[in-house]
Every structure is written in structure tokens, then in C-alpha cells.
Length: 153
Length: 153
DNA sequence: AATGAAATCATGAAGGC
DNA sequence: GCCTTCATGATTTCATT
Image (tube, rainbow over the protein chains, first blue to last red):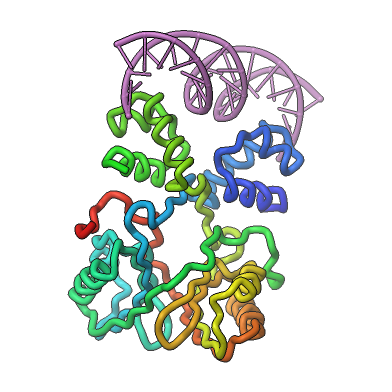
């Protein structure tokens, strides 16, 4: 992981369709070398996959909410994970520190559908309460920053 | 937006490197037709971009937190947006309903760096308080679901 | 680890159904 | 709107430094 690898990652985050010739030029390498470095980044798992960013509203997922779940048992185990993963509207699920136990990110078509999903979430074993944060507007959602140093490493 | 378009989106979310011939086969179309449909999906903005999914830990962003911001003024305007966007560790920023005003998603290398970012966030004009939720473990983060119907549309 | 060249394969455009 | 064809250009491998 040197500066060139980071520059390649940033360039691919911005546009993963560009040719290796263009990528190489952007970081000062030949197409072949750029290709080889990217191959290794994939192999190591630094690049998890190449994917597309879909506009949620265009596919009927214009409503976004974050929900904190209270639980009366430890929910950090596979059964809980699987129960949440089975709900397609849940995009992310995290175990958190603090008064709640889990935080999930939910996208639905309408507030009514959000309510329907909350009902399913409430029925997951161990859940004793929910606190819902509805998003009114998204300022931005962007790829994680790979270039700026977080000084203390 | 028919079922074939949704299937194309799902296939591209899973792997945007596959050839149009493979994509077409997956949805029952020729390579040329698949290509044409994907071109239109891009043109319409349904596909916002083709990108890579980077492992946060591999680039020194292994610490994840969600932070709710209290404010004493309306923060839904461009200056606030720009002030937050200028902090590279902030990956998402949303205006929310409820007692807080904003929700941001932050990734840093260490808890110490998280503290440093929180300090910067606190210095954004209008911010009067923060409540931080530290993620202990991520169950999953996945592309938004484009296939399962959200029945009421 | 990077380069340049060569073979394979995918892309993107055009014409016909 | 989909299919087939074709020229162009990108990917990927390999020999070389």
C-alpha cells in the first residue's frame, strides 16, 4: 500500500470503467503496471468488488431511515445477523456501543413501507424496542476517503 | 424500469466487471441489447456510477461511528454541507427528523482520530452538541435491494 | 516491480427484423 | 425494442530489463 496504490483506488472509486491506459496515466504508470497493481489489490481483498451505485429513488427506495434496536439478550450472533439479513430493505446492520444494541439502515419506497419493515424488525428475537431516525434529506454519500492520511499510523 | 432492468442492476451490483455477453445471458438478452439497456440506465441516472468497494480496514479506516449533531440554527443549507464535506473522514451526512438535526457517518484509523474528527465537527457553525455511536462490529453492508418489490407502489 | 508488444476478447455502433 | 455483425479498442499474458 503506497501512494500509487491509494491513487489507483481513488481513481477507481471515481470511475471504475476507465481503461488501464487512462488509469496508468493518472498515476504515472504504464497500462500494464497499473493493471498488475489493481490485480493485486483485488487479490489481497483491498478492493472487495467492482459495483454500481444505484439511485435509490429510481428503484423505489426513496425513504431512508436509521433505526436503533434495544435488546434484552446478546444480539451479536449469527442468528440475529441472519434474521436481519433476511429483510431486504435493511442495507446495513451494525453492533454498537451505548444504550442501544444494534443500528440498522433501512430504505423503503414509502413511510408506510418503513412502518411495515419496522414491524418485521420488532419481531426479530431479542428486540425489545426501536428508535427510528427518519432522513429528510441526504447531503452526501460518498466513497470512503483513501488518500488523506489519518496522521497517527 | 421493468423486471429485466432490475435484474441487470442486481447483476451489475454483484459484479460490474462482467462482460455484456454474460450479463445478457443472465437476463435472457443478447449482449447488444443488454448493453443498450445499461447505457440507458446510465443516461437516466438510475446508475449513478461504476465504482469499487474498498475494505476500510485495509486503508486505515477501521473505526466506524455514527454521530448525531444538535444545532441551534437551521443546518440544511449549503454552508453546513460544505463544512461537513470538507472533513474527509465523513462519509455520509443526512438531515434528520427528531431531536437531533444531522446524522453523519465517520470512518477513522483509530479512536484517537475519531476524537480529532469530532472536535472538527463540533467547530462547524451552528453545532451545539454531539452524540456519538461507536460501531463495535459490522454485520453487513450491502448494495441497496433493487429486486424485491416494496408492495405498495 | 515496470515495460512494451502481441493475442484474445469485449465494447460500441450500424443495419435489419 | 431486440438481434447480429463488424471495426475499434481494451484487457491480459508474456518476454525483457
